[in-house]
Length: 105
Image 1: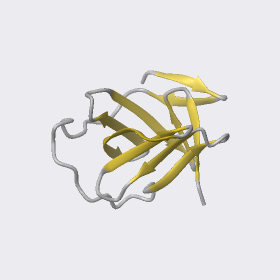
Image 2: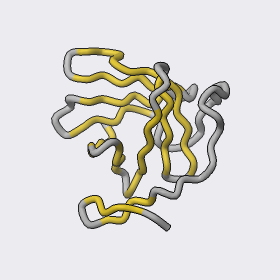
Image 3: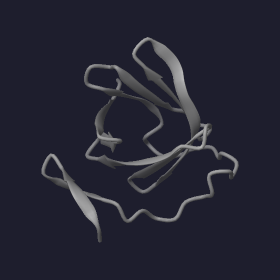
Image 4: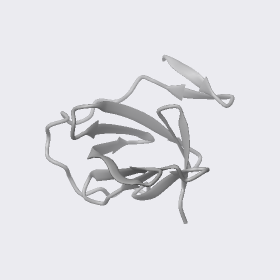
């Protein structure tokens, strides 16, 4: 297994297979649907129940949009512009792109 340390925790980078980025979105039944924010709320990921996400940055609403897929604790994003990213949920926290996101209550 390959991985890197994030605040003393191993974050895996051996991701499970997921649907092709062009595959249609599917209804999501996992517990991660909802709003995830950085501590300063500058970046906000809204994981929608239809398999799409909407990301806001600062005052820029809908800065990035696309589809996502969750397998276990791994999330994979395909931005509508073709950009790919991934992240991992660990103990109620989302680690993604060098940022730490918390569930907005």
